[in-house]
Length: 404
Length: 227
Ligand SMILES: Nc1ncnc2c1ncn2[C@@H]1O[C@H](COP(=O)(O)OP(=O)(O)OP(=O)(O)O)[C@@H](O)[C@H]1O
Ligand SMILES: [Mg+2]
Image (cartoon, each protein chain N blue to C red):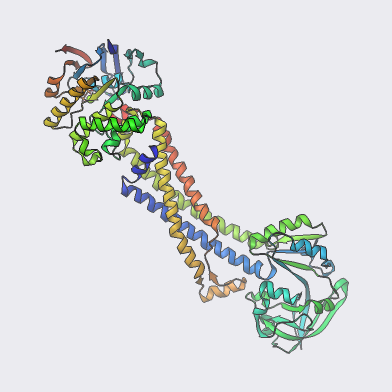
């Protein structure tokens, strides 16, 4: 009966309920959309800085990330391979040999990152072959290289030209070689594009004298969260000879940046919800004042105060939760639209974004936690607001209310 | 045998600049089946007296005994329960719950008491017919006239078969025809259901129908006549 009364009371003053609903919907839509776009930007940043090329998690010899020394190269044993492939969330892995060399042609030279790759795995796990803009993708037995388009234009090279690489190899051996350029690959990030030199694993083993050894195993995971989970569970399995790092550990600046931006968003959201919360509180006070007599009569004829309190509490909570649901229903299609039709940045920002290695689009995120958070916040605010009438009605004096 | 007994009942309001003796040393006895009017000019203490008898308000001194129970010994929750089980209230206005129909309003108190649905239905239909609202059973208060609303209020007050009904100026917002009709109805129910009625009023035509008239002035009993 209390529920029936509450439900009817909600629809009794349609305008007041409408205003409360509208305020809630407005707040939910606005903050969901904001958080969704922010989250989308983060996802974009994370996938372009970390995900695409370096993966969300990597395995190295312990201490490698500090030193980046080829001397810490290790063997990819069967048991290691098995431990990796048997880890939850790991969809595959890419072994690499990462080293540095001077790329020289005629009198021009440029420092570069030489990466020995398993050509097949790089193709299946992140579509490296699709980045080829000129020439053809490497095969495992090639004694040739692919270079980033930035490096190519810097050194004024094109396919079939020859590039000399000079560097230090395993245990101080000198690494020298002359390689034909088989393909030019495009990278959004100019930073990467100006430095990358890819070499099949076999050729890299010869060049760096690392033979079968590798320096890095990139784990392929579906998304950033899975990367963190995979790194965690793999750490448990591997001994202290190895270090397993997730993308957060490998990109601390990115994490700090996202955290800072997120707290800005929370501050905005807090202010928005404070304003809305006081609005709802105001309409609730009006409602209490209007219904004073009615409450007085109810208590006078024998309704327990606790029932009265529960009735009003249910009224407030129902309207707010209804508002939250409607708000989410309204927000979802908008977010979905910006998810499937990302906003293209203007030219200026495009350049800036590319400098950070990001895709130049603003795409909303559809991560479920974004929507759940909003619903939860509304429920909490409504419960807090509903405390007031709850307590107030516990102390109601029927005679006084009916005299007024 | 008296169902209600007050002795030296006094209520003093001293919140304002001067203390008001709203009820001043009132001792009355009311026996079962009475049809009693409490009359007096505005501010004479009618409402205050009824509220104290009904357990809505507490006296400053003196005592009220209802059906041999001392109201002063009860706490707030016990008083609510006492009201629910023993008293039917009719107020001057805003009696009904706006979101409930006439039928739902009438059965409201029985619902609070936990009376079974079957029992509620028979009782409510019978009462609504008696008060002449059978046709309007599914209307909400806003769709009924003032007189009709008060009839529903009387039906609600009686629905749970209380020991007595307290009505504070039940006719104040009604035109004289409706007021007389309501009074006739109350008289009829007083006989048929043998319920004790105490009501306050300053409407002479209403006073004429009462069988006992207690007149108050400045909180004191000026006269107490049975006829
Ligand atoms: N809560 C209160 N605080 C202060 N004074 C009060 C309060 N309730 C009643 N009074 C005073 O007590 C006196 C009696 O009031 P009461 O309402 O009982 O009179 P009444 O006979 O019902 O009047 P009316 O015919 O106008 O309804 C009045 O002087 C009134 O101002
Ligand atoms: Mg009065």
